[in-house]
Image (cartoon, rainbow, N blue to C red; front, side, top):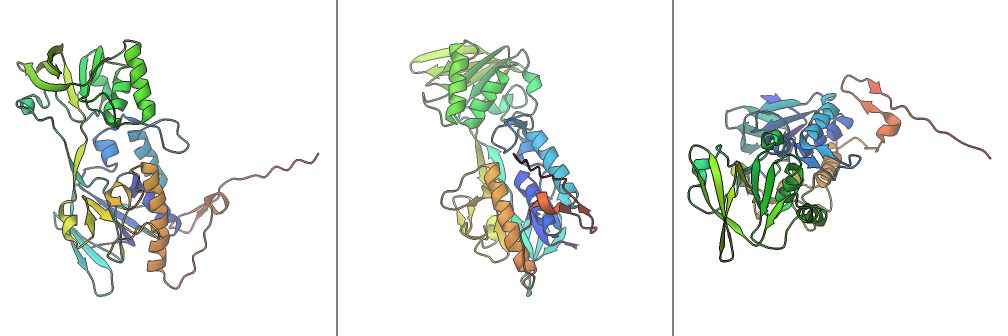
Length: 350
């Protein structure tokens, strides 16, 4: 049996940052993730996608963000159970929990934190016949390596942030890029909409709205994409068709744990500590919901920090917690060493 102070389900960016925050409080973490390596969606779905709203980074690739988070939390030596899914939850008489994975690995901890992003997920696919026959043969629902689109004819379909962001990025490398959306209005960030409009005005992309892709053709590989715009049918040469309609989240076994669920998300008490209706179980990141919730990585970081404060009080009810700033105290390792942060104060007298 694997024992830890905090068992984190989900090794995405929020789960990894929770390891660091827990480490500052000398709490040991272990993470479970169904994926074969840490990073969550940032690694599995879009490692080369730039992220623009991480404080201190005007732009950072999703994969680089994960590398930095792993480096940041590695000093606290977290444990990982990868390639396994958290399956069963059993509450013990002392209030702690035993979580068993689908492969039978047992974990014991007084605190369980669910940081599973959107949970299990699958892409929302276009509703027309024949698309499955072109999957991995020109049709892809995720973008992992932008370089494969260099000098290719690329068709993107969708109107959200992913469709807009990848239109902007792939326009830099594609031979020809076309964005198709069934409405004239887009759901993504206004800044991204403005950038796409500018690309269209500069004839760097082809924008077709309101329209939908309704048929694909090709022999061994995708060759043509057919678009319906009002009463017109448009035939486009294509090497790749990338429908980006979002993901359908599924909580899986977690939905059977007695947690309060609302629209595939776990309800938490955001006025205190992001604890669920079961004491000792927290949910942070995109998997939780509360009034005013924003599905942003930076919001998940905030939730992770507050969760760790509450977890410390549960694990150490007799200890008084005093908030210390890392700029003053440094980062305390589990071996008792203290890595001092270098700081200087300059006073000028006129």
